[in-house]
Image 1 (cartoon, rainbow, N blue to C red):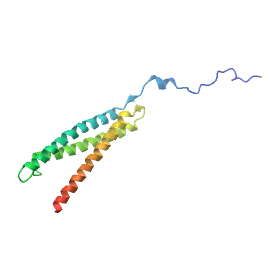
Image 2: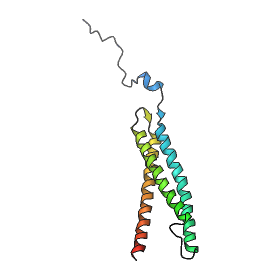
Image 3: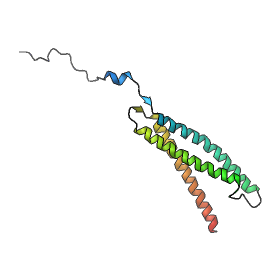
Image 4: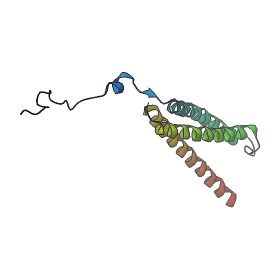
Length: 139
């Protein structure tokens, strides 16, 4: 008596279900938004750097220095705070984009990494500025 499965062809080990190859994965919309926010933050960072250099020039060239209530100082401070808020939103969107299933993660990973690095750098610069300002106040 022969075995009933002896006439079957050998099993293929590289079987991929047809549904997996029919529909390519789409990029995460939240990941794309996170990456766009990071790119805007990089461009905005260069603009803020120019404003900081301008404020420093005004600080040095104005007799008595630039007052904290001066419009230039307020614009630089608001720019930094808005950048930090936008970066935080981009970081959250990137993390949510990483958690989404059935989506490509490339944009979400890039957005999360860029937003986190820029946010850490901004907070570091903020801390250095506060330490320098605190050192001047104590002197």
